Image 1 (cartoon, rainbow, N blue to C red):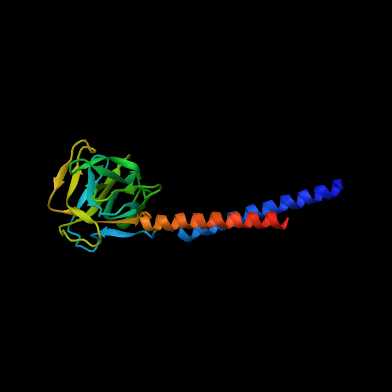
Image 2: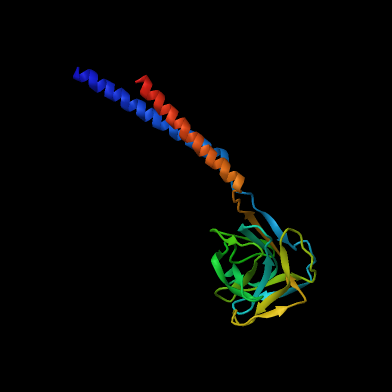
Length: 235
């Protein structure tokens, strides 16, 4: 009798375990139905199709920046592409960073704002990628900041006189530069840096989507209750 009791208890335990796994599967399936896959990054603004009119130097003291402005959505920055004209001294550590806006000029670097890319870029297009989340707020200005952080590196970047661009965002119609490492800034209203900025939209569920998610959870809970109730009746 004791062995039989243990056997029944063991069977009941296995049944409860199987019931729990079925509930978990139902819950996962319901979440999967409404889980938003990460959106694909796309070029949100670019003027790389415009003319190459002038070049300016970037080294440890000479800093070149270009502002861009987002639209009404919320995004995560993916990458920034710049156009290098020539490398005069490759012995520096070239960096590309994202700064916030301080009255029309670069403020401070945003969290995770140092982009990953070549420390010694080659002539032509060079892309620098975010290594962590860089949220970009709606209708907000940010700056792409090019500078050599250390060493005697010397690079010339392409600028354009064209004010045209493609994409949902906009590029400010002036560049901002510094000749003292960013202590003071000056505006250049004649040319703007040739850049392309890519980002992914952040999907925020609408009220209707939240309602569907809540309904799916209620359905999952009901299904789990039914499974467990059926197990109790059967055993």
